[in-house]
Image (cartoon, rainbow, N blue to C red):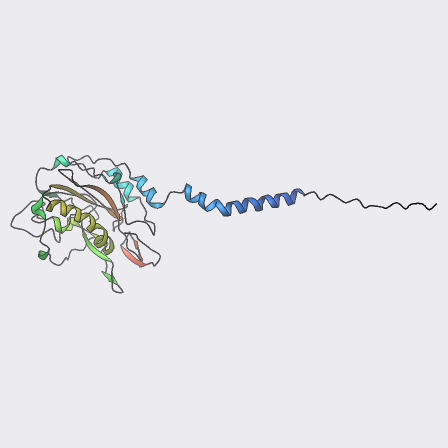
Length: 286
């Protein structure tokens, strides 16, 4: 009888993952998850620039003056803000509520602060206005005062600088350079070194006029208004980083408080000297 031959089966080795391969797989999984969701997590955890700026100045203090206004603490907070390309040109201060005391309106006048040791208008000018202060635009004359950081006025046909008023020409009819009302003078404030600063053409013509119009319209409606403007300088820089504008009507129909960055699309500035440099990456939202 023939012997049955035994089949020999080779023992199949079980494939167990090594420690090294497990680590590689784990790293790949983590990388994939982060690549998919990491940017969203970062965006959710990092507030945008406007939120950061608003948070810094969301609760303002009142200046220690009979009429309130911008405090020295909040001045410094505003001076420390850095504009980021693509952000809005202005932010609200104190949730857009003025820190001026509306009951402080007594006499039609403007309190012009003296220039500082660097000849800058670095302190607040505060105006106590009424309807007769709305100025006739036809009485404007050529400006010749050069505030600190003033340079050439245009580049390649683009206007860069303006002589920006603290208290607008359009709401200062009859106010002389001492801040007193003179009915014989129906022009608005002009060529007053205490009321001018170097401002970008964009900020002056596109943004600040929005808020000056609010004041002017309130006056035309018969209201009395306290209006304050404060250019904000950082340390010894000669060009202001921005300007704080706030106003309140005696009857309560007008109330705002904003900080406008002194910036311009397509340009960056050396605020120490005021010199401009073309930068096509600089974008400003109105």
